[in-house]
Image (cartoon, rainbow, N blue to C red; front, side, top):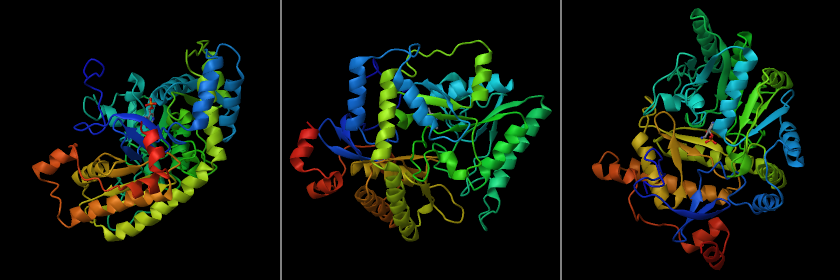
Length: 474
Ligand code: PMP
């Protein structure tokens, strides 16, 4: 496939990749008509190929698609709709085509507004793939092929209550929010000593690639204060965690209280349910600074009527299908069941999450919290054998990441946890030697494992009869 796929592009399940040919709701179908339960795809937010989203996209495509130098109702409607979900004074939108582009633009805006240069980021964070945002993504610049932090980038500790810098293994730390926020103050002071000044603090409202981290209470309020006292602004990256995934709120930064209001919010992935549309939202004051340079902002595809129609439709579906409530119910049910599993399985070190954003951290030992990386990879592999798509992430790749389409059901949770329960038991009972060469091979995928999903189970989890399934899988 090298003629279409540069060697740096990597597939899921590299040794035994899946060719997906269609998808619907929380299910993906391969070329042989086999279906997979999707626990990975936070992009297909309201469900793969949601009929309303498809309809509105097709309808607008047949009428007009052009750049945003013309007036069009869709762009105004979308800006109004998005800003109505955000606190004041976040009321100015710039439409772009990807999360990377949104963060790249936010960086430029922050530097113009503050007339300062440096950026503070959280350890292990990922903010995108352009040159500028790779430079603010420790996940990349500290990873394979990375060149380390540039002198204008200051990396602060991830506010991880389970295995972070301030986690006292004997007694859970108090005031973790304050302790982690003080790390920003230290970074700012160090930068000042070097005659450097901080333009912005970038952080995901809940760290995703960094291991499904829920920051401690009070963290952002205190961190933002340190940044603003130093003349910088605060950027919330909601590309993975926004659009109601957390259930109780539309935006994950809102979990930290009404007095936490970022200066810029970036959003993407779920916004178009798979169609490339993303956005930067800021305040009128910051937008005025950005305009004052005289350099225009133009983006050929950003804010085109088709993308806006699709994003509007996604917002409609979230509301009409009460997907935030569903996130609370299904996510709550999963957390409850996971707490029970945690008492049974020594491999489960920590369970954390909110709504449809959940992490299961596997450890070899509860006292030392040594990451169970190989075991996590084995779980992913076994889940794939049972046609459940799942991923692991975090600095040690030992956190099983749950971020499915929001239509995921409680029956789906049962299906998923039945397999996880079984795989963990097998490993704990010594039935799987994860250190053996054979398992190392399996981790990266081999063909044809057992399939425990029967026809009736298929019906139960898809809610579809065999003939309908067959038709869908054609
Ligand atoms: N920010 C975060 C938090 C992300 O997870 C990602 C994508 N994984 C991006 C930004 C970049 O988005 P995109 O891939 O749409 O450019």
